[in-house]
Structure formats: structure tokens, C-alpha cells
Length: 265
Image (cartoon, rainbow, N blue to C red; front, side, top):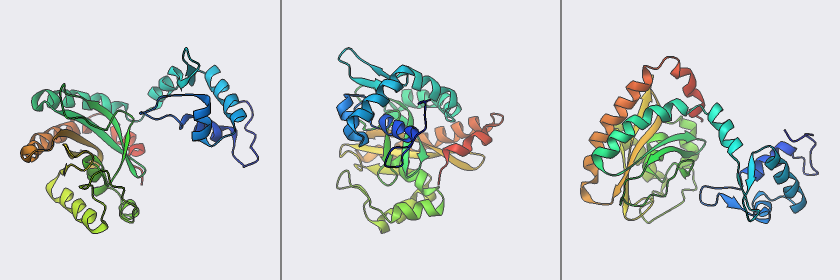
């Protein structure tokens, strides 16, 4: 893609440096100047200019009227072709829409990606409590209800790595103690859902349940609701929806082979 794969004096290939340029963007800041990209990617300005121009020619980046840079439509197009979560998202939307209309709160779907939960779909209710999650956004596994569900059913070596920390606090209610986190994960496995009042935002409660396909947890389906005493009462309809989604995914021919990339130790 970038012509030569020649390495820099640091030993990095052109492709590695191009990936660092792309990773400079975030859901919170999808538009950057070249100098911002240079700082975030820790690349010399001249190198950044060259990579940005080449990525732009290929449609992977794009410029606006002020010459600022954003992710290009071509990158989105390529990602849609290759995404292993397309079937999961498409199927989940049917169930999330029904859940969303019944409970009147924001719904979201997350998968395990490394040591984070990656949110691949969400529906926002008008006037609902504000959420920090967005499609393509990430959170540490210990901090959110979706993360706790995924971590509770993750391989033991991943759980051990997360338990060793560090466990970043978002509010005074975020789990930051290894013993407390271990107990919370056991409770998730026992109860079949995670309830996190005020763990990310003081005024919000996250509730999530596992989505199983062929017996394996492949995603976490969740709600973000006001931090009130009756929030736990939504766990049951959420569990029913999660089980129904799992059954729908289970019957799709060949899906079990496509699940593998979603579960990373």
C-alpha cells in the first residue's frame, strides 16, 4: 500500500508507522491537524506529512475545508467487508430495538478485545441518562457492566492479568481492589448479570448480561439507566433478551466458525 516497506532508523516499517497515524484518531476527536497527528503518533513532522498525504490518496484519510484530517470513507468500506462482527450487529439490532422500546433506556452491545470491551452497537433513548460509550468506543474490563460480564467468562490468564491491575477509577464506586473485583466476577457468574451503579458516571447504572453462542460468551448486552434503587429490576428482561439473541445467533449456519476472532485472550 505504501510503496516500499522500508524501515525507519527506529526499525519500524512504513506499515507500522501508518497504523500509528490511524490510531491517533479517537471517537472523541475524529478530526485532527497534521501536527496533532505527529504528536500523538510520536512521529517526525515530515514523516507524518508524507504518510498523511499517501493515506489520503488511497482514501484511508480525508481532508476537510480547513485541511484538517479525518478517517476516510474508504477505510470504513474496507472494515465493513472484513468485519467479523457484522452478523452479530445485524442480528442484535432486532432485539436491541425491541428492548429499547420497552424499557425506554439506552442499550449497547460490547465484545471482548484484548483487555478492553469494544462497543460495536448502541441505541440511545431520548432524554436518557448520558452514557460515555459510543460505537467503536472502549472501556477497561473492570470498570463497566459489559466489561465485568466479558471478564467473568474470559480465559483464566486474561482474568489474572486484569486482576493484577492497574485498575483505573472513574468514580469512587469503580472497582479498584483485586479482591473486590474477584468477588464481583464470581457474582456475575452466579447471578447471570452485572450491575454497576455509579461505576462510570455517578448518575448512571450499567446492567449487562452475557450473549452465548454454542455455549460460549461472545458478547455482552447491556442497558444504561439512572442510578436508582429499582435499576436491578431491569436485569430480568435484559436476560431474556440476551438469551433470545443467543438462540437467534446459534441457529445461523456457520456462525460458530466466525465467532473465534471476537474472543481474544
